[in-house]
Image (tube, rainbow, N blue to C red; front, top):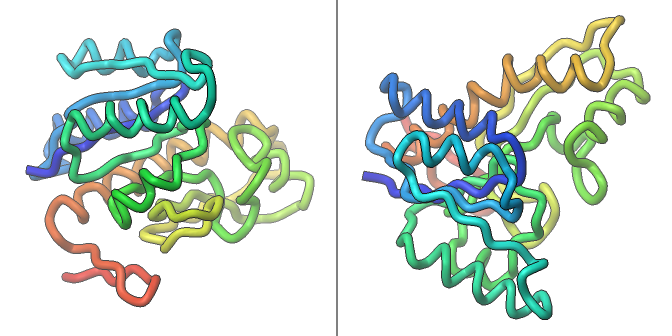
Length: 208
């Protein structure tokens, strides 16, 4: 059974997609051990508690400096002994020591087709604003492993979403979530939970 810690900063719609997929059997051989947020008011924590899952807030604001936070954050994650860490809209930079300790065991969902509209400054609505300003016809979402760069780790899954002429950043964000994020994030977790994902020479190899 794959033990998962989900890290999220906001409402937790991707967390809900994971919870629903575990409940309905789309994700097998996996369970969420804890949900961690840097925001005490994140609705994601309520979603966790409604499912009987520990919901914990740990924020850089609670510590004198970033090093102290990084140490405490890693200790808290380690206390749940996860096999996989899922970043589902987590707006905190992951400490390098955590990336090293959980190499190829941290995944992130990003609301674009990487390498487009990713990297520093591209998060939340800014991603969709960038896509609309550039005039692209197709966008989408990407699930990838996390490495020391920003959105640079090995890509696991991508799914395209068509851009419509009347789109606003808000409508595009919603459609990318519904048509891409909420599908490929649970799919990636299920594949990892069932041993279908390996990283070889910096690239993802999918078995079966």
